[in-house]
Amino acid sequence: MTALLFAIVTFCWGFTWYAIKLQIGPVPIEISIFYRFALAAILMAGGLVLLRKWRPLDWRVHPWIALMGCGLFGVNFILMYSATAYIASGIVAVVFTTSTLFNALGNWIFYRKNPGWRFALGAAFGLGGIGCLFANQLAALSHNPQAVIGLLLALGGTACFSTGNLVSVKLQSLNVPMRDAVARGMFYGAALLFVFALLRGKAPVMPDDPVYIAALLYLTIPGSIIAFVAYLALVGRVGVGRAAYVTVLFPVVALTVSTYLEGYQWTLTGASGLLLILLGNISIFARLPRRKITAPAI
Image (cartoon, rainbow, N blue to C red; front, side, top):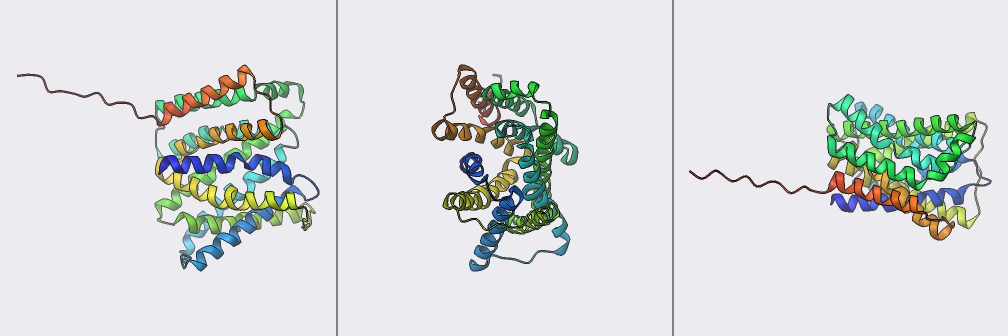
């Protein structure tokens, strides 16, 4: 089941980068993100009501849900999209992989869980592999005077994503079903996005482009509802540290999509990066054979 959850999240999120690119245009970014999570929240809540699985929650857990929602579905995306105004989206994807480190650090600070040497080694391989895959874009940062602003925004968005992860662990410890937490969290995140858009003077624009609408539907259903429920279920199973490794894997899917749809050119350095990511995956998740201990003969 754990492997299936990893595959679902990796492939769902791997295609979102291209879908996001298809939405760039006349609709303000803040409004596009609002449409995504408002629609996802409505569909998910409606589905739970129809299936008679919508349950009232204790008011005391709502502040935690709001914090998770604003981290995962609000501030995270505001900062990440804003970062693309200063640096390439590929660099933002690279920076986002540091959530493995943010999650491990937060897990250690707040929950006193040591990530272990295998995770540290796997994360190092994974981050190094992503660095190789985007080596050319990373090198270009040194020539961009606004790169620091973009990097800080992307790091801030990643930190917010990790905060949402850590809060989801708290909610699971309170026995809050993740489907209920995600549906309500999306409502909170969408409300934050709407207020943010209004404060910036961005009025809702009704899109009529079929490509935009198709991208919105993909981002709403597979990219938000399915992926986030699966991801938070993964957090509950393997912890925030290991679950965050999926953020190192899905950029590989995104690169594969770019190869066929955007003409991404593979190089020896890029192929080496892919190998490092696979090695990191093996380091973290492969089961080492246990040494069989036999009793000494008497």
